[in-house]
Image 1 (spheres, rainbow, N blue to C red):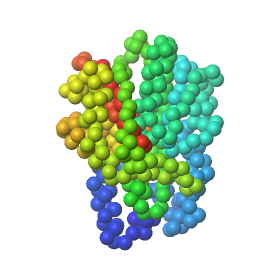
Image 2: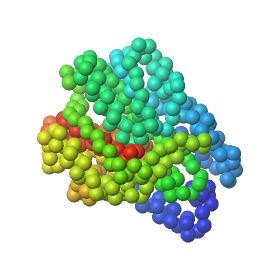
Image 3: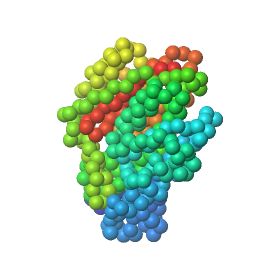
Image 4: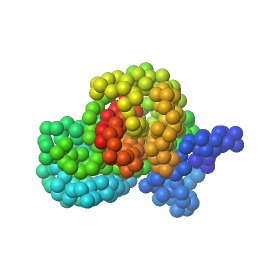
Amino acid sequence: MQKIYALNESENRKLRFLYKQSGIDCRYSVVGDYSRNITDWKFYPQSENLEPFPRLEQRMTWYNKYAAPLSVDAIRKCIDDKIKPDEITHLITVSCTGMSAPGLDLQIVELMQLPKNIFRTSVNFMGCYAAIHALKLANVICIAEPNAKVIIACTELCTLHFQRAPTMDNIASSLLFSDGSAAALITSDNNSSKGIRLKNFYSEILSKGKKDMAWELSSTGFLMTLSNYVPDLLEEDFKKFTENALKQNDLTLNDITHWCIHPGGKRILEAVEKSLDINKEQLEPSYNILQQYGNMSSATILFVLEKMMNDIDYTKSNTIFSAGFGPGLTLETFIAET
């Protein structure tokens, strides 16, 4: 990043400080160039100024090459020892980092040889909270169709959209975001498999943050706006927002045993802590996923949820509150129990 941004020594020190303070140790990318010598680059041109800079068409070509195989790997891991691929009745694909028609959903159907009459739909361009929106759709489907077996596949290739101009938005994006894929299986209540039970969903828009988190298309990839003001907004409003969500289920903050919060960044998690007056240990799964993987947009919350579900004591009563944040500024939540 220091080489590409061509910063002076003072700015380089600031960049090193930001990376050191990010709470992120490791991130993954389908673009191997980020860890290769310039002579081995395949996505970017082998020039210090990256000219000719990759255009949107090239980025979408790479998305179409890598997103589907990653999604299939995530789905197979998810359903292993639970159901067979031909038992999947509904497929919901989620992404904000690549779009085409026919798209990711049809690629998955073809690669997994799923039934041609499978119900499929896509949640596109909603950003980091989109997995919760997809869970909401899956929940509605399972209520309407008791025999439904719904697969959600969230696949984000954020690093395809690197922008070379050293603006604060671009620096923040290239510091935080990474690539990842996660899948979830949702069935009706009469399924006896171990898991969590979705209870309630709630969404709210913080209009005063409308311009502080945005995601737009451009000829050189997607452009991220991520204002430093977002953590301040969350610190100010998150407790009230959470109380509004809990009230719908006759719960209070004290009833929550596990907090499954989207790790949009270290400062966002710290803002949630301050707003709710909880300690860092209560957000350990979120911090852990941020440290190991960075921010994978919509897939991240499922990584956090998986870690939480692996650690939960299912002999006890547990109440999970989950929240994700995205453009709008939109806050989306679900409540789940064991």
